[in-house]
Length: 358
Image (cartoon, rainbow, N blue to C red):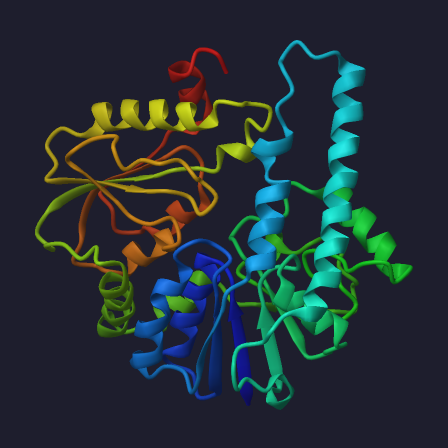
């Protein structure tokens, strides 16, 4: 089969690489600059030989949309806001986002596709998120061979109201549904059955392909090969014999979306974690969540910052890395790290103890 994978986020790119290395299908890939830095992987992907063709798409419209509707821009209600005022403001924000969502849908009709790509030659096209302009372009052109692939391991907890609203609006052909509910989605591919949108049409095909299955199908040298692709692109390779602690940050937007000072909160939290877990290690690594926009560059002189556009699961591929402690608040990426000596899932109560004004 001829397959096209449109990779807009770090996690789907990681899954696509694991899949490609043993695939007998003809696979092409579009690397999308939805998150700053994703495009850095382009040269390594073009040289690696895993794909017949590698394309790049700079999704300027989506990044503008995302910056405009971002949580921190809207959710700045003070803790002493009156309950009714709070509700009114949230309703306003929801409809403002909906307006921008529909506007992005119309802008997508005017995008310039990657040079030389022929979207009509593929048996299936794998897409990650219904808010990208490339996805909207495919919907506008009424492609019906689209496979919706989860863009994170846990995506269904929030957004229930928006998903229902968009599904109703889709029936009126006003807009397109989210998370696999769009009428042009042929099937959904998820890593776990619990990650299936409950509002998806029951007639849609569900394909379950777990990360454990993909990982177990890889030889050690294949795991190392994928890891080296990232290491070369982002220049973070380091000695295998180092004793390492890793801190995976979380997207606190989704937890404290009424805080104006999230950058200060994230920095303060990180400093406390470094101070608590820095002893008896050769290297302390900070891996920011893809939606964590905090600047950690000056937080500590003996810390290595991995770009947020690199999927955290990549480090679990390299079995020669000696990760002593894996530290996080609450991120699903920690599930991929099976060989660390100790996992410290601190939980939100830890944050509350450190940050007194939360």
